[in-house]
View 1 (cartoon, helix red, strand yellow):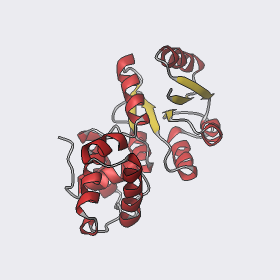
View 2 (cartoon, rainbow, N blue to C red):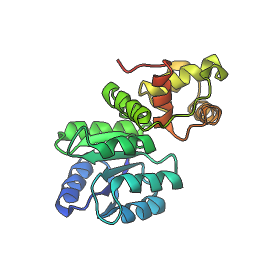
View 3 (cartoon, rainbow, N blue to C red):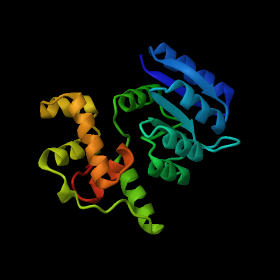
View 4 (cartoon, helix red, strand yellow):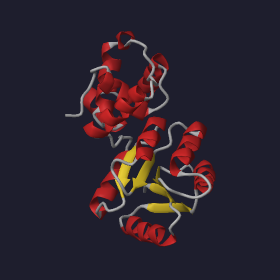
Length: 214
């Protein structure tokens, strides 16, 4: 059962999400009405997935996501937004959010997104990845620049599959290794490339031409 934390300042919207998710066999373990509550609940309950509204009082969704990921870099956050090109979505993805879902998405799209992220995937389409990389350049920020030549062939393949959206389980099946080995290799990859999370790793792989999302 996937455990989900809802963070949105509109009670009616949260109630609708709760009803939908519980009807699909998921468990809503908490509801946060503002960003500070989201950070506290995430630390206390360690949900599988956090649905985080962009615009919230006290602490907005981006800053809340940054705080959550500082506490636990493995947290899986999906941003909820009204607009695909929302400026804040880019900032959240740069911070390590696994992707975003539009508020007008249908139920099937939402359930699929939560299921995929719970399995370890990132919801990065080609346009979003390119926009975030462009944003890094516009602000003269850089992803770590360690050469991927430091990675061996198996590590490079794992990084490529991660960037293409495969979960740890899928990577393990494709490479005929255990999920534990995948997790250990990913930790080593993050250390070698000075990366903090899967989202940054996916962006790095796309930028360096290790993988593409076409």
